[in-house]
Amino acid sequence: MAESNFVDYVKIYCRSGKGGRGSVHMRREKYMPNGGPDGGDGGRGGHVILRGNRNYWTLLHLKYERHVFAEHGGNGSKNKSFGKDGADKIIEVPCGTVAYNAETGEYVCDITEHGQEVILLKGGRGGLGNWHFRTATRQAPRFAQPGEPMQEMTVILELKLLADVGLVGFPNAGKSTLLSTVSAARPKIANYPFTTLEPNLGIVSYREGKSFVMADIPGIIEGASEGKGLGLRFLRHIERNSLLLFMVPGDTDDIRKEYEVLLNELARFNPEMLDKQRVLAITKSDMLDEELIAMLEPTLPQDIPHVFISSITGLGISELKDILWTELNKDSNQLEAVRREAIVHRAKNLTELQQELQDMGEDEDFEFEYEDEADDEDFEYEYEEEDWEDEPQK
Image (cartoon, rainbow, N blue to C red; front, side, top):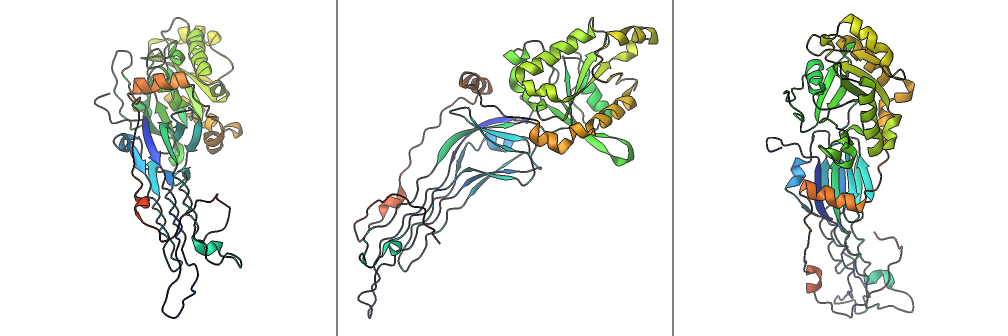
């Protein structure tokens, strides 16, 4: 993949900002000898936020920005002055990005829409100054709250492409050729297995200015769900597709058997993918005559629509578009609902996760040491830590 900039998997270290410390200060002015406490509150630490951005198509921009730090909150000061809130750190990701905890494998969040924001790590709340703790019997409190500590987490960001139709088939089944025929996409096409090494998207034009998005992924072989071939790496890209277009060459010995092998691999990867709408396309049909097509008809799966096509001669392409458009617009297959609800992200198995990280070259550990610059200040009065209370701040 040296010639490609497609990055769909990164591991980054994220750290939110810690809350600023509350101030311990007594008001002293010339004509106010008993001014009392006036220590201000500390500022909130910055959040780490994931935001969907439709202008990004891969995670390439994060591959070389592996450490994401939000700003710490400022400390409070005299005259009830609040500390400055730490600046949030926003991570722009393409729509379709899923975040997992790299240490536990747990699912964290899913970004599917442009502009959608999810707080990945919350910044610490600022501590209350001693002004909040004055009472009738404690008129000169000499303590304040510390700010809440920062949060940190190593996150795996995984891109799962958003598309309406996903192409599923063995290597050299004609997936890339079909995509180049029905759209302006220009994937690499050659007569050897695994020519496609990365997913490709194309916009397919339909009648009256309508269109839908088609995704081509590298070929699947038997055992792909166990890591054979290109393995699990690209199967996740068709989890989000509203409809699956199975493609089997017409010169295959047993079309039904090959279709069932593909279906079994998807089921072993994620059983919920069997709930998606499916269409079968028999490719390279320009090599078949009408008599042979008639003989093959009874042997094909009867529970899904099928069509004989040829991307070279254009045979059946219009009929295929009609079938795809009809299936996409069925009440049971509304695109927006499917995109949001049809996929349930499961936690990752730690053993499989470690192997996946190793395969991706993302298995390095992040170790950091930080100096607490907030402790450099000297307090005039004794500082005592107290437990946090849910008191309103500003």
